[in-house]
Length: 318
Image (cartoon, rainbow, N blue to C red; front, side):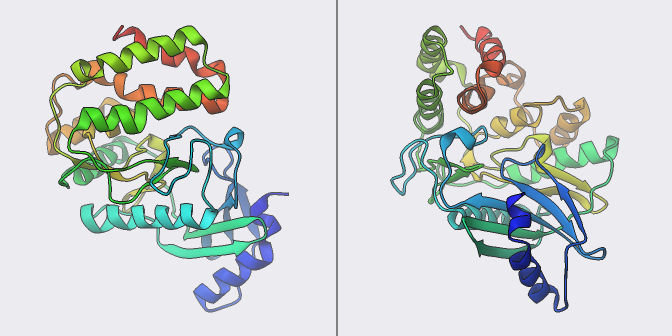
């Protein structure tokens, strides 16, 4: 049984207390294809919520693509924190995006402890089909996030990329931050998974050695969604709603490259962004450079099927 439905009684009581009336599940939609955690949309026919489950401890083989960096709390690559910590950090990231950048985020209901883990419950968001306007709105919302700047790269607290720990220890230098907090940890995880051939790992090492000359002009520390791929935006009548952030201050090109990481997006997304903020002319040549980390993580978790993407990205720089 789906872990959210296993905890049905707890979820129903939790939401009932929130809405001030009896709320029982009469409709449930599994979001397995869209979420890295087991997740569902639940409704009593009048009020809908989003609920996702995180185990108290989760093995690396079950995790979605992301970072395996050692976090500031001392966890080593492949070790996950409890679900409550993951979800509290996610809520903090959503609040940060909303308060500092003014973007729409789901309304939180809270975190409920259940047998074997925790469930994060958010108010449901009513999606609308994406046409030209909705795609442009995503570009404009991302630009609003990127108008917010910090003093250093990273964040004062470490976080998660999906269920995996992400080291956000601040740094004054972008190239050093990205190499030490992102590239090397993802390479180590891919190697330890057994899914990365030795010759490909050596190519990644050569790419890392060249990174300072490939990464372009030094950016200003910029607030990032951190996982801005198109499935982490829900288009609604009120505008795009940001979900599943992995917030820190970094290079805005990382978010821009993430938009079409797994599926292409229309050109008007970047066009709308560019009307709000300038895009460096060299970004198109660096787009795949910023995708190497995600491809490494996908190889480590989902297997060799992603080696082609990884090799194709590195071919442009080696």
